[in-house]
Image: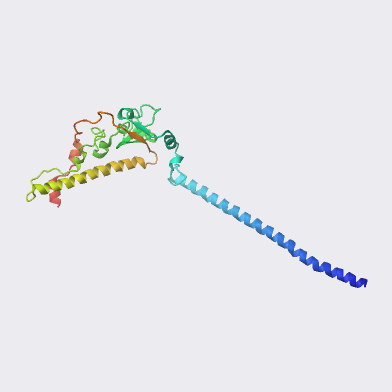
Length: 251
């Protein structure tokens, strides 16, 4: 009887032993799996961060040490733009605008195109005193941007500037009635005004989309600021006008 009891006890221990052992191994295996997963996530994060740093460094080098985003510079990353945004847009008369020509280093450097003021302080070497384009600073010289007369046309008076794109009637055309000439003239006038508008928009876009410049406000016209007589067309613009004879010969 004692032998039978010993055998049954041994059998029960041996049967219970294997049941407990797999459970402990299973828990151990789960812990190792969780650990592997956490390490994999950390590895992925490390790789991503490394790639971002490498990409930013390469961008900084390729853009001549100016940008870590391959030339993309959001406005909120540029302190002068943020400062202007906080202060709000400026509203200046032409006489007030003239103070922002770079002579006072405590003031920003402004250039205006078609009534919009742009801050060009980042390029004082060009627009500041002694710079090659200082004559544009502190004024709205939209007319000069169109005609190219940087001495005579430093004004925002655009009246009559479209004439530079109209042909000079240097010949007498046969077989063309006065009514046909009038209709043709109206079409050419609309096209000329379109060219003026496109040129102004191109220059406005140049300053608005420039990496270093930004819009600062508007220019308001003073009372009596517009002359009674339109601004005369400068000599250089007159020379650029096409001739009707050349147009007829080409046709």
